Image 1 (spheres, one colour):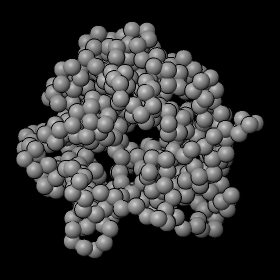
Image 2: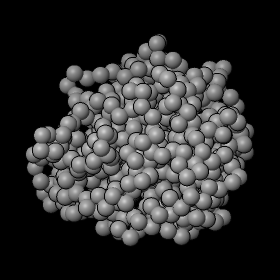
Image 3: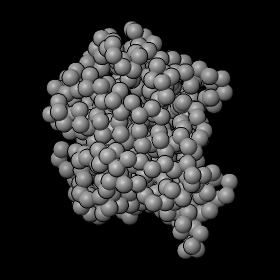
Image 4: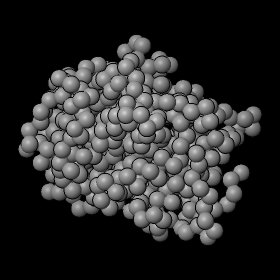
Length: 458
């Protein structure tokens, strides 16, 4: 299903709308141990045989650590007004706490200064999945002390960059960290335990809250949280399907937003986890319920749910549609879901400022003999989702920016480089960057303030 065609005279997005692209440290930087950096749990995970589909590591990735100037020039060429990136915690604090690595911190200072000189606003995410290995050895997200560790790290970054960075995010997609890293074991650190996952989720939120408190004491701008949302629909009106959709929504969407905005976890989580669901101190929930300046929403697809006894512990699985287009990640292309997610946040939690902090698709595009890259499926994906974003603005959602995922083809975590999300193609043998047709389309959207979306697709 596609969002309806835009009305005549499509209104422009807000004048100060952030037009951006996003990356994350481990996926693009490479040089993970350079200049005094410490290893992360993702460095350890990718170097463990059998963990990554292609057997690749992030040792080189997109070599952004050395090629960042060229990448900033590319962003400027495309007309980006914002760039969302994450900091490698272990590059700045090799042991996770204590000693600061000045060379690691200087890398981010140079990057921020280069972005600002190019007229590109830096949006900094403090944690995008790569935890210092030294802290993983101390229990990682299962250790309650991690909230303090994270706040101390955040303070280092605030002191270094808050005079030049106006937008901070504490965590990126904590649901993925808990689900992939502690429940199913498919992502770092590779644990698989129903008893561990709720603890990791809770400590992620406690760390978010501790960093927020640190920022309120020292920061001068805006700080928020980034979550991934999937609207969940029942496959039918049957009670079992409705219940499966409700469990799925509670587990993926409300687990991290209800505590922040409403002060408690959804009731369905006790059903999902059974005896593994712990009771949490009221003081923790009170601390987690703090005002955020904005919410980042990462949207890729929706979930049409039905019972699935093999899908532990949720006991719910997605139904596929023969009429839909699916990406290389087997995610349904469903632009209406972006509108639905943004409207749902506003209706449930109030008029919080929102940024679409990730939105994009992996398709099997290839370079032609002349070096150009035509990616019509991605171009259509971006157009339709940007129309959905525009519809959300017209409906009253306080939407302030859009970040395509991703600027570059990169290391797609446990999929290696087999999945390409970039609007810029990366030849991983030569590190050559080639803007795809989708990048040129996005550049025209930016140039026209969104008005180019009113033109017919083609």
